[in-house]
Length: 603
Image (tube, rainbow, N blue to C red; front, side):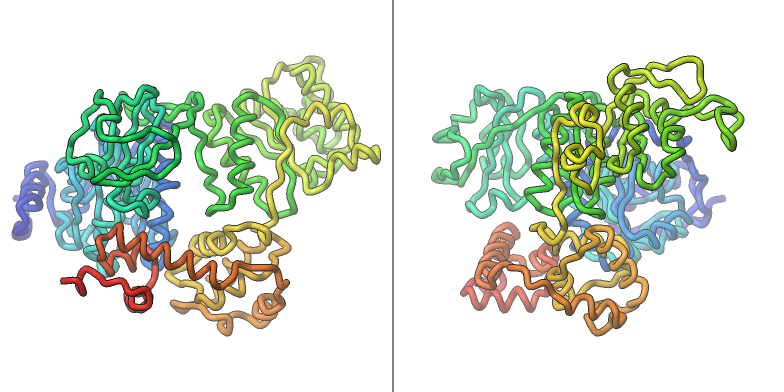
């Protein structure tokens, strides 16, 4: 006989518990885990790669801003409740593995009982399951909020979930995750075949770029293809797929903000590019001709431009040379390019030419036959070129490649065959080669230190990743990197200012190691400069005096962001404080200074 506690009072929750009992589950017993084999997990991730990318760009940043100080994870599941990917605090992830809330595990309601992921799929709406509302007692230490993700055609394509420690969960979580899903679904509108125009709508012009705007997508003739829920509300459900957008708009002129009697709007073009990536769902094609925003910056236009150019030349198999100081993230840049390219399903092999002994680098790159030289593996080695066949070979610090190896590399690139050392035969290879260096290769060519003919074979697009001291997103970059190492700690505003003004000669690598050290040594909620070791304090107090944004410009930006957020939240100070990551008292002070009344004050 099954022993289960008293059913809850909420109707939908009570129904979910009944379904759990009917499925044969016992609330006192941890249910059996149903986990996909590793190869099937990889297939699922590949199938949902575009959706994963959209989540990382349009949901994960908000998650980090709100939940960085809590034991929380952001979870993406497919339509069957199988967890595809998770993000968030690593320590909490280890705790969640105790109940198998991890990648590749089914969290269908019939297998795991009442839980936000599985129940949201059944209910087809956002749900929150708090602590003891979970049917299984072993799940009572967590609180979960999940929302279905629907394609523009109305099909369920996934579920987004935030899971937290019970005490860290609150009522605003459902509002926030709905905002995340809204951002995702709005972005998915750009994936529709024949999408040519995107119209942003709002009752106030400041909302048009806020993330709370209505969006309508049309073809090149202005025929409506799809819209999000906010657009339907703003337009009072006047438009349906197939209708002419000009029936509600005065003009389709691009980029200019215009106003009708009921709303503001702005028309933008949808840029598209071909992609071989799998679709998000059976009837939901992958976004074709829109280059994805680079996931490695927080708003730096130089990195973004380099990213867009690199994506374009990669898909056309044009050579790519990446320059930049040591530590600027060249390796991570290439990894991100690989994930977004048409070669994402094929291997990426990376070699640091400067880290290998010069007398072994040719064997590493081109392979060798059994017994080719003293100390060689008796079975031989196929070499990195053959390992990368069909995919990408990234040669970092190529300036350190000996001239003899440069000659052999040129031959492989020209003939598309590789002959291992000591072998009697050659092997055909189809490899896209990307190279990088912190040295000036053109100067090395002029000095005879790098083969000129190899340079011309490699050269196509040359991009330079900027040093972090010149990046416009440095503050956000530091916050993002620190959040990866933090255990609920945050950097104080004064410390963050010091870190932003420091020149970081080691670039991203130095930021990462410093943030890891600070997070490990400072076991307090809000870290001040005086909490740091003496050598780190001295480093941050030796500023380079670079020019920074004026106080006036910064204040104007903050005030504009506050006004925009208050309008988007209809004057809800509590929600605005969470979205902006500042206290309610701070918002009240700013609003009083600006002479703006809140919803509560107006009533």
